[in-house]
Length: 211
Image 1 (cartoon, rainbow, N blue to C red):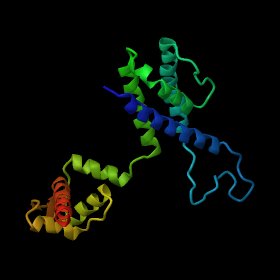
Image 2: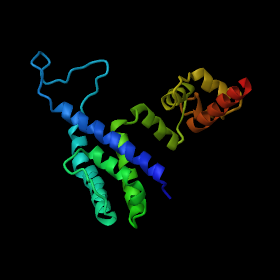
Image 3: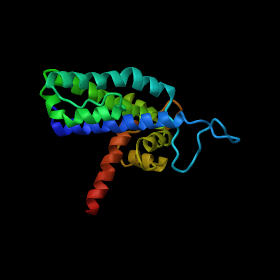
């Protein structure tokens, strides 16, 4: 069962994501600068490109009706006031958060929380899309990809924060921590799943030994 604090965290995330996208939409509507790069948004060290028209459609067609719908239902069923009519979507999220305990008391609370949580995940994915290399590596894990030490090292690097070289993968095999397979090319191949698990155990063990 969702607690009021968990719902508040969820709605705070939704409010932040909606505010970011709506701010990007406003920025992208600014008139082009009268210069050689007219039509392009100024680029600076902290610059961030405006969200795409796809994000605009998503906010208008999918996100807005759900958030406004649950807020309106809560206003009607729990007799709450102060609904932010004609205000940005993030203020609707803040209004829902203010009355989160009332929302959780509604008979339709489970459905509302499930939909709001789904929206938060979808907005997060749009604002922070996964790295293509990481996506490919995750797909390789799902298929238990096998490859040379160099190939497995490249995939492990994409999955983690630190670089993994082929010598480390080869060492895992020679030390018996993972199995070695004969590949179709005649080279020794390794399992990405086995290498990832062994590397995690190896790193954890080294950390524990230093404590």
